[in-house]
Amino acid sequence: MESDTLQVKVQLKILKPMHQVFEAIVNPTEMSKYFISSGSDRLNTGKTVTWRWDDVGVQAPVKVQQVVQDSSISLLWSTAGVESLVTIELVPADEASTIVKINESSWPPDAEGIALCLGQTQGWTHMLCCMKAYLEYGINLRTGGIVRSAK
Image (cartoon, rainbow, N blue to C red; front, side, top):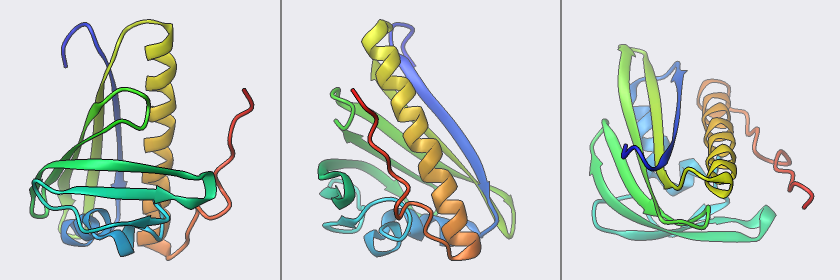
């Protein structure tokens, strides 16, 4: 991270093997069970896909920078008003569980950047909790869970 930008760093242990966690991230059918409403295609290096969140009327182009099988995904998107780099790293905790680490960066260290960074931190934490509930227990926590904040 450059010293003049803010960065999100979140992580959570998922009690599933790395390949299963990886598939839940790159496969839009799986991802729609805990994070997005739908995705236009599987995440592959060099592709641009569209993720949709129908419950809040938002869609975002996602430019996939690199996918390393069962290990990491990096992408560019502009959901917080600034194009930012998201990296998702999968680290084996043991044969049956995976630590998912998500970093997102690119916000200026001012009041607006802090607000955007905090919002993204909340979003990624929510995503990881929803992924954990789905993969470990088959529960979709995201359904009905999104509340738009009053402005």
